[in-house]
Image (cartoon, rainbow, N blue to C red; front, top):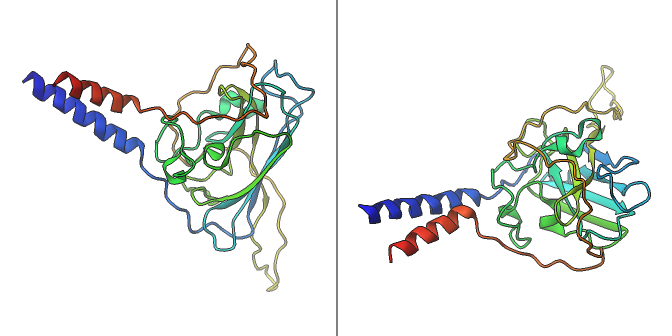
Length: 257
C-alpha cells in the first residue's frame, strides 16, 4: 500500500511537470497597420539605481506582413554599471502611477511559470512574455534588438495580447529597475463615409486589465538594497532548474528502491 501511494505521488508529479511545459500557440492573425509602443519614464522605479536619470529607450511592436506573430524593435541605453546582465519581459498589467510592482507577473497564457529557466533554442516552451529569455539578455550599453516573436498577439481579447499592459526591465537578480506601459500609436485604415480612407488616429489606449492569464498573484516588493555587482558587459550562463514537482516525483520513486 505504501509503495502504491509513493507511485501515485510520483506519477502526479510527473504529470504536473508536463503541464508546466505546454508550448505556446503561434499567432497567425495579427492585424496589419497596428503598432503598440512603450517608452521608459524619466526616473527609475528602483530608487537606489546607480545611474543618472533612468534607462532611456522604448519597445515598439507591430505585425509582420504575413500576420504571424509580432515584430519587436527594442532600443535601450544608460544602464547602471553593475547588476547586469539585465533582462526584460512583457507583464500582464499596466504600471499604475509608474509602479513596476503593479505590473504583476509575466505574460504567461500557458501557465508555464518562471521555472525552469527558458531555453532560447525552444522558444515555444518559454513564457510568452519572456523576451530576453527567448531572444537574448541585455549585455551591452546601448542595447538594440529586432526580432519577430510568433507567440505574441496584437489582437485585444487574445490571451497572448499585451497592448494594454507593460514591459519591465530587471536586474540579473530579478529586481525591477524600470518599466513602461504600451500604448496604441497606429490603427488600420478604414473607409470613411465618402468611400475614402481615414488616417490613423494616433490616439492612446487607456490601460486596463489584460485579457490573458497570469500565474503571478502579486508583484515583487519595492527593493531597498542594491543588487550584487555584476558588470553589464559580462556574460551570463544559463542555469536550467528542474521543476519542483519533478524533483518530488524523483524523490518518491527513489524511496521505492
